[in-house]
Image (cartoon, rainbow, N blue to C red; front, side):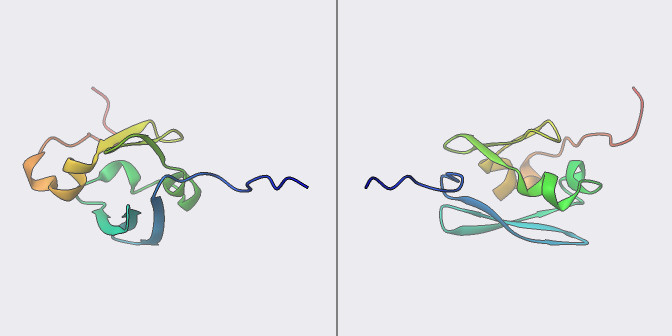
Length: 91
């Protein structure tokens, strides 16, 4: 009998908790907090949309339901990346 793997391969990423201020993401054993003040794209998202994150490459993550992609460097150092999306504002 051959056993087949079950579930999704997460490649070392997982959303651990969502709060009114942001969410915690586990990446390769390290926790990272993504506050909604620094990452406004997630503020109105559902928990399911936040939890559906894909690792595109080593430090590149993509949330397909939100069309948001972030580099680990910007998650670890949001102050170094001051450009933010204008949420709900027409150009």
